[in-house]
Amino acid sequence: MRLLRPFRSLLIGLLAASLCPAQPDPAREKRLGWWREARFGMFIHWGLYAVPAGEWKGKPIAGIGEWIMNRAKIPVREYELLAGQFNPVKFNADEWVRLAKEAGQKYIVITSKHHDGFAMFGSQVSPYNIVSATPFKRDVMKELSAACQKQGIKLCFYYSQSQDWHHPDGLGNTWDYDDSKKNFPKYLNELVKPHVREILTNYGPIGLIWFDTPQRITRAQSQELADLVHSIQPDCLVSGRIGNEVGDYQSMGDNQIPARVMSYDWESPVTLNDTWGFKKDDHNWKSTRTLIHQLVDIASKNGNYLLNVGPTAEGVIPQPSADRLREVGQWIQVNGEAVYGAQPSPYPYEFEWGSITAKPGKLYLHLTEWPKRDFMLYGLKSKVTSARLLAQPGTPLKFAQIQDRTARLNVLRITLPSAAPDKDVSVVALELAGKPVVDTGLAQQPDGKVSLSPIFAEVGKASSNSAISIDNRGVATRWFNPEDKLSWKFRLYRGGTFRVVLVSSESRGAAGGDNWEGGHQVTVTAGGQSVTGAINDGDRRPNARNPRWRDVYSEIGRVSLRTQGMVDLTVKAESIAAAKKMGFTLREVQLVKAQDPPAPPAKKRRR
Ligand code: H79
Image (cartoon, rainbow, N blue to C red):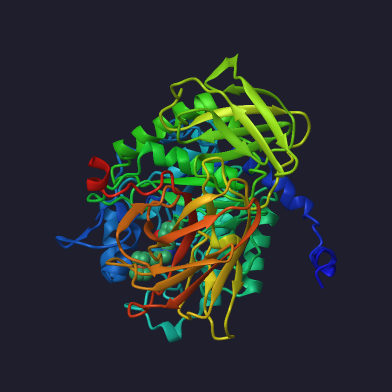
């Protein structure tokens, strides 16, 4: 059995390869060329919802701004009146496009029609559009198209194909229209397809159509829409949210960044504060530091970063957004080489110190924390021929590579200047002799720490009723059955005493309020030793990569691991508290080197 194991996985691999031949569609590959190079785009949510800006009849409406019609259940006849007030006299297409350029963004995706059904382009299909229904009367998309062509930015359109709260047969409006009477195909044929034809015909070359929330749409309907796009502009991409997996690339959930390198093309749409469409009371801006971290983290995992701005009803991109975008742009001025056209990290897992991107013959180490001493990287087998900071390209860095065959350990040690050249992310560019070859197995890191994400765990479900699943953030969710378990194998290089820390995660499902549940008793078994302890709400910190969902740290005990080599680790719950229906959400298991033996009691030391 043991002997057979490698062959078994080989067989499964071969079988999988033959079932899903890695045969990329040449037309799609061609379409994806510019998009893979771009890595960073500007999302713009702009529509009638910018007029109420989060407030209706004197009351603040909770939630994302562009949803105000739905959240406040505003009747169509009332919401329509906003068009008469929409007069964005400060709108200047050249300025918006210039801001995107200054930020280092290569494409703009703007809402041509959001769920509220109002077309932000001149249309012959329906008078409910910016040219026919507002005092402004200008086709802002024509102006943006001209500005984009002049400044070399790809213009792209968001289009809500399923939800349309204005059209009687569109989805989502159940307060004006009887849902059971809706004729969805009629809406698709009479509004969506003619609209899509217009936005692909009247505004020059379009980079992509960003469809969203594919509710109720059948595979045939999604396919027909994608075919329509490609028939008019063969080079125009279709986002994954067209539904039924017919898009050209995948879209992550809103504000979600996955926990690992993905093999496919993907994009994360991210808000600068907590809303997409402008809300006057939302001042919860992400820091520039967080934005740069997200940019490099996403690139390191094979994705694109689509960062949103929500202009006001006057046509102004809020100053805090513009300031941050320009700061990101300054960073890109120096470090863009490590982002544009970057290939993902050769390591499948995340590093606590930052992220890695690659190019042929090159690796880029994006250091979000500046090391106190030398920087060390384990597992790189390729020969490094040079190292330099992108911020100081004239100064080669000293480095050494050590290979320990018995420990199966490759160490790269780089000597860095004492101060970081950039306060947020400093990038070390390595030149390699050949392709990067790395040890991809889970392993202890140079600081002695072992971090294990559920995304790499073997999931042991106790029964077919077990609901446990691992989301894209790497969080084990729906863990209600204490018989379920997660297990990992990792390589230990240096033994010692380790604190066993379980990092739990706030749930992303629950809307508002407290969305975390603790009180579970959990056992971790590592190298044959078991410790049991409680998941408690002691220490909550924003997650560096997904700041919307905080991490909750619980230390449940210590284990002593002495021997180098492969170690088995299993997490199992003894009991799970599930009154709030969240259960045990696990984002990571950490073994942290206990630095010093516990201090002896104070009085003994003194005498
Ligand atoms: O365009 C942005 C969002 O308006 C759109 N996608 C991004 C890019 C989006 N459409 N639907 N959703 C996101 C999911 C929406 C969920 C919520 Fe709600 C809307 C949570 C709060 C408001 C629906 C209404 C669920 C609870 C209340």
